[in-house]
Image 1 (spheres, one colour):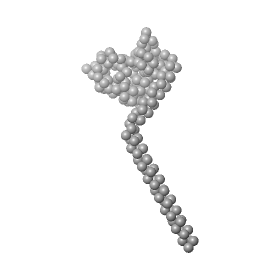
Image 2 (tube, rainbow, N blue to C red):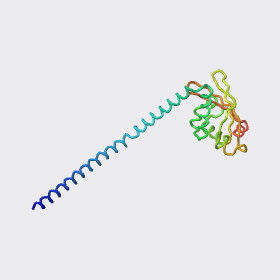
Image 3 (tube, helix red, strand yellow):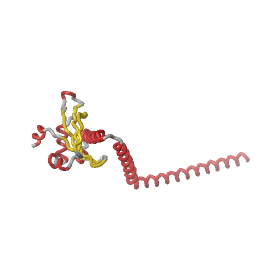
Image 4 (cartoon, rainbow, N blue to C red):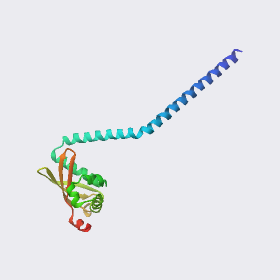
Length: 186
């Protein structure tokens, strides 16, 4: 009889433990379900907030680096940033950096700018700087554009880039254009 009683107690204990485990699992499932539902409904706001915080931290780090650069390093950095946008085909951002009167005269639309860049610049290029001058509040860089895929047989050319710095990381620019390409556009 004692064995039957022990068996019944063990069986009752196992059933009780099983019920407690099931209850815990159900509670965890419900909590996770509601947490996930809340994060989905407010997720876009949180993701945007995190993205904005990361962007702000990157901007602050970039400003810190610019503060520590010499004048020539800073202007060369701006030029390189512009041409990185061109190289990665981010023409919208590159177009926004152009001096407004320069845009009006040569690239009245983003499409005309994009077309010129696609037609004139090599698919993959590197820059080298041969001269740097400051003329009042503007800077002029002499830049060699080298076709890195085709080497000396590729489309290599020189150009001038004019940059006006309004403040750290706030600048506009323009560049010399090839007249042969200009006449093809007309």
